Image 1: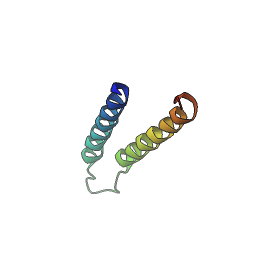
Image 2: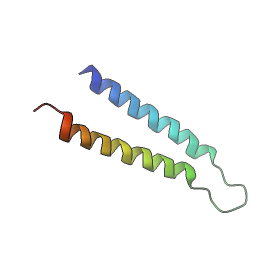
Image 3: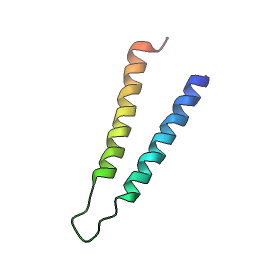
Length: 61
C-alpha cells in the first residue's frame, strides 16, 4: 500500500516540476516554444507505459 502512495506522490511531483518548465518557456516575440509541454506529454506517456509494464509483469494476481 505504501508503495502505491509513494508512486502517486512521485507522479504528482513529476507533473508539478514539468508544469513549472512549461510555464517558464514564455515566447518573446518569436514562434512559440513547445519544448516544455512536449516534455510534460512525454513524462505522462512514460508514466502510463511504466504502469502498463508493472501491471503486466510484476503485479501479483
